Image (cartoon, rainbow, N blue to C red):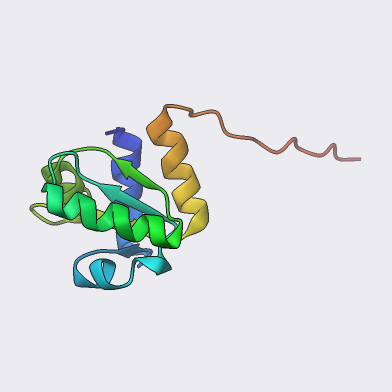
Length: 110
């Protein structure tokens, strides 16, 4: 998992823009992206892929349970839901390895 993504997840957690635990399991439709740990149980993966398919939510399998957990201040975490659509887009770009971002062209001062 990209180290920048891990740091960004910590910021999202402190900002209240992540769903995890039972709230993610019961209501994933609030999320713009679901992150699954590579070493999550097959039943957990199946559950989230089924829910994501129902609500048309993209899913990325990345990192281990320990990596995801440490990023948000827990020992382990199998799944995270990102509620903010702009943050979900940023994490998707970071995980694909595309770090190119559009930067606004500064206007000339007169």
